[in-house]
Amino acid sequence: MFNFLSSFLLSRPKAAVPAADVQSRYSALKMRALFGVFIGYAAYYFVRSNFTLSTPYLMKALSLSKTDIGLLSSCLLITYGISKGVMSVLADKCNPKYYMMLGLILSCIVNVFLGFSTEYWMFVVLVILNGFFQGMGAGPAFITIASWFPRLQRGRTSAIWGISHNVGGGMVAPIAVGAFAMFGAEHWQAASYWAPAAVSAVVVIIVLLAGTGTTYNEGLPPLEKITPSAEGDELVKAGDHAPENMTAFQIFRRYVLPNKHVWYISFVDAFVYLIRFGVITWLPIYLLQSKGFTKGQMGIAFAIFEWAAIPSTLFAGVLTDKFFKGRRMPLAIICMAGILASLFFYMESTTLTEVTIACGLIGCLIYVPQFLASVQTMEIVPSFAVGSAVGLRGFMSYVVGTTMGTALIGKLMDIYGWGASFYVLFGGAILCIMFCVLAHRGTLELEAEKTASAENRQRNQTILA
Image (cartoon, rainbow, N blue to C red; front, top):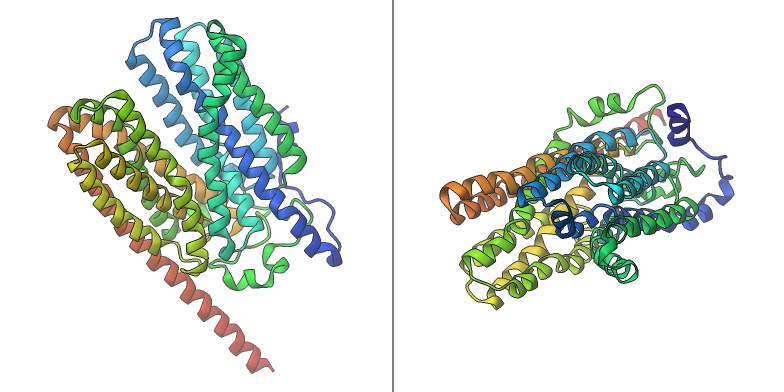
């Protein structure tokens, strides 16, 4: 079975496309590639975020406490962060379409078993398994985008893909509501777990039929040979595919682990996640307990935080491609400065209008540096090491960043009160700006190295001539 899966997933090329057909084939497939990772990653949310919606019924059915539910949620989050690091590294040696869909179908199977579970320990085991399989989604998506789209198109392309997070998370509730209307509240397991799994399984079939792997998997040459301008735009030579004589972890050790640029962007993302989860995790409790808001008022602020991200992410993608010429960090620095000011406004706000505006500003801005960090990750390593770089960044984001935004802030608030949470958020924003500056300087270094290399090649050609 393992040998079959290994053979199925391995990154292999199709028959080479004739040179005369390369451009037309590339044009026909690149939007299919984006379509596949968009709906594929959105479907990952169907079988991950659905667990949160099931918790009220789960608490009642198993007589669980809030601590029990918190433990289950933590198991999912931490396992996902670790798995995202490891499984994204393994994705570098695989066909990303098959790898991504394998993770999704395994999550669907876990959700089927969740619907049959009757004991708390069974939920713990299955939630951990789900977190593990969920880690197979992000790496292949970034590998696919890096393979098909040149640097000066990745901002807007990644912005479109980034909306899949919001679309996937936003569709979980309608799927569940429709399932509850069909099955009834007494069959909450079917509505909460089986219905999202069924929808996700349909997406698997669609992606396998309509999606693509990398250009290499589709019998096309590397991107820089298809689009001549791409080679000049890239900060790092893209390469064709993972070297046959190197394992996934050898690629990680050689191209990612010692790469200071990957570490800079990983710390940027870690502090972004600290702020994101530090606000979204504690916002409901803060508004109810500290500000005295009603649940309805809190819900308005919560919704604004999430939905404000969609237009800003799209705008940021176009802006960095067109105005900043592919440099991602200047806009990230501007947004982080805006977040720092918005956090002060959020802390001092007293009315519903003020809090809603503050939450909207933070939600609008916080997803921009997160999105830009993921775009820059694709540009500072060869294309065959993108999964490994995404893995390190994902590990730092979920294991380090979210832990500081949830557990650390919670502990400090128990000791020092709500004020401590804001000091952590302010400190995270300042440190994030510092690492954004370092990441931008790293981009300038890579551009200078590329220019010097091109000048040396031209000089050598002149001498030979």
